Image 1 (cartoon, rainbow, N blue to C red):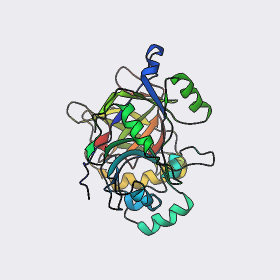
Image 2: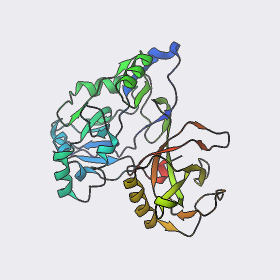
Image 3: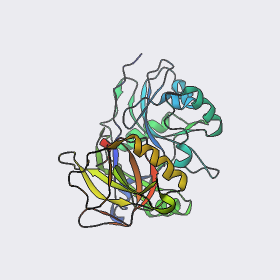
Image 4: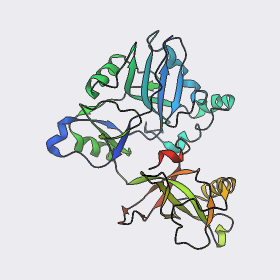
Length: 321
């Protein structure tokens, strides 16, 4: 049995399409809306799935265990995204949330697999047989991955197209997909690095944030959060920088869920490096990660017109910069 190298996923930088003159220097993939996963196949009939944070999530997705024998005795480390597809075949993060967090409940995970099946979209390979592939350019890694013919009911290798970025982006917009990933053809795989060689282009601006506090609601929202105080980590010292508050985008059910989570992590200490200029704030330990949509980023680094999108249980606060 091979000893496989533990590999952190390479990350993309948010941005826009490459200039037209550089279009044919990039491959374009559909941006999937799911849980980033490194799949380890030692070649002995077993499989280990690791989340972006490194947590073992294998028991949460029993329908993916067949991938363990898909390459026979060939050991490999694959990079991909676990998704739950809607009726139109699009990845739907809200559906997937019902599957996340079940690694400690295999019986429940097996029941949920029947009603909300997961699918693993594979888009890179970093190790095969007896060697690391991280030093190879994207084109060679991609050709190697495609040669493995990993396409079954519960996993697949979606297509990538070289050039035609504007058309790919428009296609995803028309299809109601999140966007595209532009990957430079010569790029090496850089584990754990947020690289400018990979660019994620979304149809709406989104940001991952850490919840550092909240403001109580009033009227029919009494007892529930009226707004969350958002933070992101300083790149220099890791401190939590206040980036604004968000008070829209929730259903009543979501507010109730958040209220329970906020009480669980309640704290008497402000976690932000600079105390936010808001009155009546209630502080929490910075453990909850969410994603918000927003219009623009102000000169002072605040998110303008943010709207709550979803919790991100697949991310840790340390992932948010």
